Length: 295
Image (cartoon, rainbow, N blue to C red; front, side, top):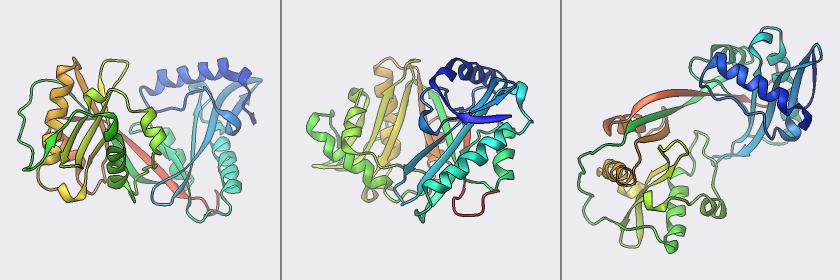
């Protein structure tokens, strides 16, 4: 067995590994073979590429510096230590990069049902920090409750974007479930399909919002659902969800998708289930301190 740095000439072989893994593991979250970059590693056995991994790094809103290790091994070559070797090598690289970072954390993702990956992470000291939950529902007619007194909807205009962006950042600041602050320029670059957005205003103040994005398969994803603290507990989130679904229906969407965190203190899974969404997938997020002894 050999580990070496990823090269662009590996792409075809890595694509075969990815497709073989998806055939066996199903629709689980696996890193794609494209753009592994300088952190990419490939596992070679008998001159054949049989797996790969990557190391990503980012800063989260609560000060956590995340080093996420992801990887994939061809099903025919599992159980031979490739995954363990790649994980250890990436952990060592992360330890060097994060040596002076006090809140550095190692992360690994293993979907519900992806038991081999979960066992690997647990064997190396990772524990579930939180679980991302994907929910969906058909886009059909729903009752529309009234907005709380004093609030009204407005179509999104260019001059509204600073307030909408600020409301998103305010609502998720300090979140301990992996929120990464989004700069205003990045927010604007992703500000598509604003006709699908639903934003409630209290005068010139944003009270709450749902950002919706149409997907290639015709579904609509809601990456941002936010109600500012002063407007919580008044039924605003439910009212916005009903209007969001109605807007999607008017635009011809058939399926609505939303993601949240099971441990969210605002009990968002229950909120979405009351609005007709049903859980499709649970995605545990594993973590361990970077500066513990690497096993």
